[in-house]
Length: 320
Image (cartoon, rainbow, N blue to C red; front, top):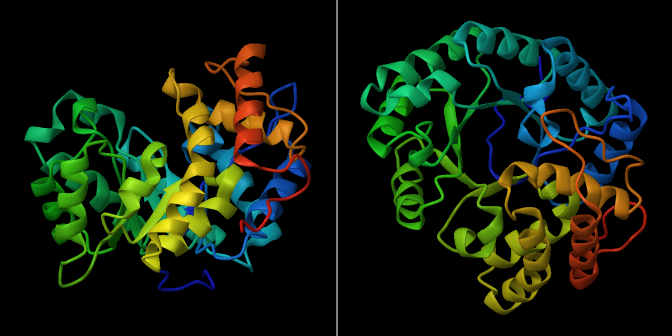
């Protein structure tokens, strides 16, 4: 059983990367160092593993279990672990959920399964069935990953409310709706429910704008590189210190602009290159279908880090 029983997903939650060696095997030594670098940042509420940032789509069930074991061994006594549930089938999702709970995770981040893109927006019983199957396998709190509606994988607000009503362990959404009006509506509705459901923004390319709408946290792959800046931005917004928030956002902006450029699929690839530039991991290898970035783009990432004043050494700094 997790020592973080009854964990509530809120606050600043970086999604950790997963370093590979040149032969594309998991680099355990580099991963352990990456975990320490991230968790050493004061002010985090949790970290996320086995999600988009760690290229979970290219990892086997056994590799995901190994990643959880390493994470728990390295930092599991220091911070709650949010474990991704990434599977196209509900039975496999349930198997991952059971593994995550047995391994000590504090919370589950449930991705929408691919088949929902074929029309589930008009049939809410499909996502409800998926989440019920997971909840039957684990009683850990759930973060529902909300995709843009245009993707076919997003949940209309009415569907979200039905999900929350049917699956009581849903305690937050990771909001990537990519629509300001929908985002604000979800914040106002979900965080006003009798049993509050937190909205964790993952709109990392417009983070300040999103946070000032009243999110109760953020869950972001960019936190694998700039968790320190995200913490200070979060704290400034919570304190209603707009001047300080804008100052920190000015540092974040060039990095977000570099990470979340087109093609969007390369965002975590770019974050790995940033960690290599900063001397935090030795290799930026990614598994296919991702491919190595071109030198010109790596140079742009380096320039963005310099503009932001992010140091090319050791672990993350505590942002001033």
